[in-house]
Image 1 (cartoon, rainbow, N blue to C red):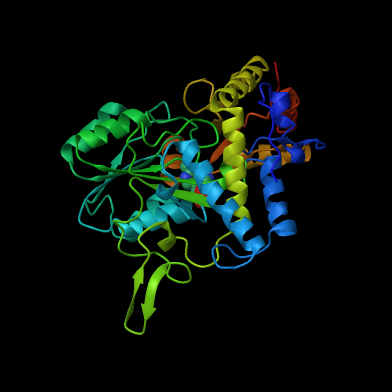
Image 2: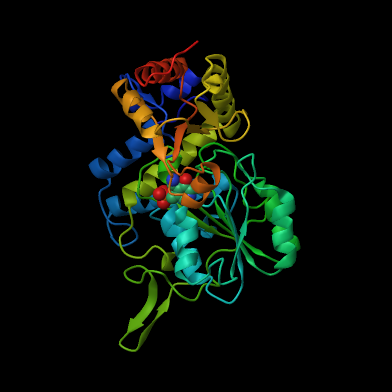
Length: 409
Ligand code: PMP
């Protein structure tokens, strides 16, 4: 059974919950791509494979019942994490899968309001369905100079297009800035819009209360919240009864099938077609439980402490690295560089510092903030990043820059 952790307060205590960080020299600063996996989540995966290896909701024997119970418990843990009912949660392969499913359902003649910052996972399914800016069905709220969007611009888009679908992310994986998403949802509702939220970057760092914020749809991934890859969540307010079609069809989705048709289950089962990623679901449940034990407050405090270390060490004063957005505590920092950012990342990799460069699967945003279109240099943090990571990063950057001919005065 899963081990319960004492409430962690410090970066050190949180770091101790991540076995991959125990004996490594790596400064892992690519958390916006994937976080490390928390101990209880790894244990849930291995417990499943060692002890409860069976299909779920299909077997008439004890291990299948245990695997099914743990699967159902994961739904309860996720529901507690985002403050909803378990029947409002469906397990998917991740944010991309969840957003494709929603877009597939919301095919009608409404306009769609997005922001300039969207990840391809949100944007491309709408484009595929024929909603484009040129065609007039896709309204794009511009990115602000601060790397978010202005409430005035978003309000204007809603006012001019009442009754639209508003689909947007809560934190940009490119600029790192959080959008004023709670306010945006309130405005969208004032103008009778349905809201689809991409919470992929926020879920590991900030509370995402779907009830308090009146969210209609929300998507996120396990691997951004300290759990396995290939598993994620689709939340729908009120459950899935009003959805009369399924994205994938197959085992587990139908109540009745004959040679003339089928009748789907009314609940989330119609979304979880085929044998799911059972170990993955156990893992995301365990991670959600761990996050509740730690609490978002402690997560944010640890991240703010790491931000102060970066600031004190001078990361934001390097003349050749221009931060997108203001110097404020957050989990993602992207820079426009005076040189090809992948050269810098390559040197850092020799020093065992893990960062990411490029367009971050958000090409429109990348073009907006980096006119010469070389991509950005991104550092992304988690509550386990410590002084060792900070020193390795900033000293590594200077070492690399000296090799590229820049002097630290
Ligand atoms: N949206 C945002 C904002 C993201 O950062 C990502 C992952 N980088 C995704 C969607 C897609 O997530 P996944 O690859 O887990 O489906």
